Image (cartoon, rainbow, N blue to C red):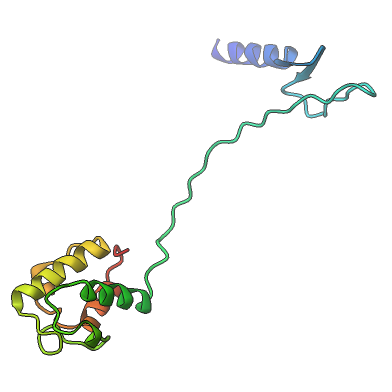
Length: 148
């Protein structure tokens, strides 16, 4: 019983293909959807506009990542804007927050919080305690895959 109804439905589908009709100007163009032969138009007839349905695609990939110079530059510019730094021109890649820049422990915490905000990451307290210089901060940021 089931096989007979499936066979009957298949026979009906083959016998009566679906037809798409598109009107171009005054000429009605008819094309069989199931047909594999291209549509042939009379000579001089206007060519119908073909609408192609395109499904939007979204490609995901890993972020490009940060390079050392970019991270270092962003941290140095962040420190140059920090008002508690003794001498903004003294900031280098090897500058120590307390020894070279004159920052105390609370200032260092503020710098770490500013770095978190700058790179959109969260630095745990145990890791924040080890960030005492620009190069340590750069190294930490480069090791974070979600920093941007």
